[in-house]
Length: 50
Image 1 (cartoon, rainbow, N blue to C red):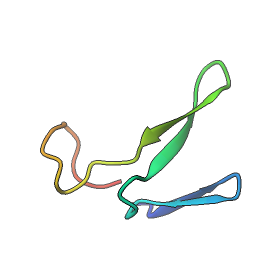
Image 2 (image 1 turned 90 degrees about the vertical axis):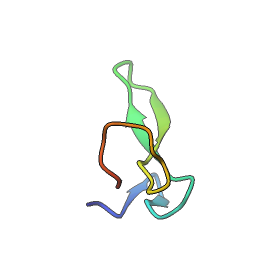
Image 3 (image 1 turned 45 degrees about the horizontal axis):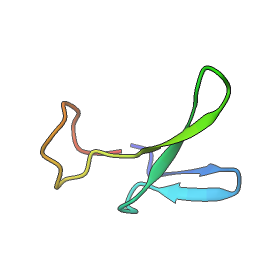
């Protein structure tokens, strides 16, 4: 599992509770989404982790 990334001189690490990842959209713009599924989250179909 990836523990962190660097994007435009910003370092983002999964252990940070509010970690968000940059995602480039088809139109070329960038949006930020939550990097998760955390151990305390019970909803979702994906396994815990980044």
